[in-house]
Length: 81
Image 1 (cartoon, rainbow, N blue to C red):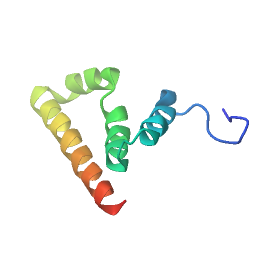
Image 2 (cartoon, one colour):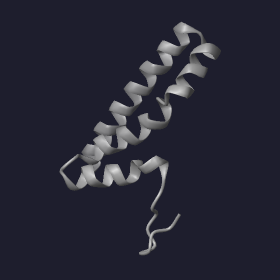
Image 3 (cartoon, rainbow, N blue to C red):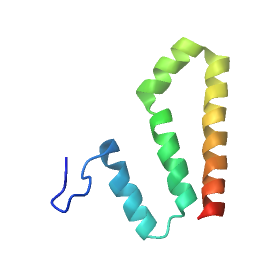
């Protein structure tokens, strides 16, 4: 859905609007990038299905990877920006 000014109004359930406000209040770009990466990867419905499919050990590895990748990405974005 397009807003009157041509900007995207609804995307990712309002995540873009939320992050835009947080950035305006002083959130770092790295934190915003990490938040955007972890959002889809940690939806409760996806996590439930992944745990069933992957099993407990691989599921824990998945969560650890998502956390580590998001942290590293956030740090890199902060260094670049």
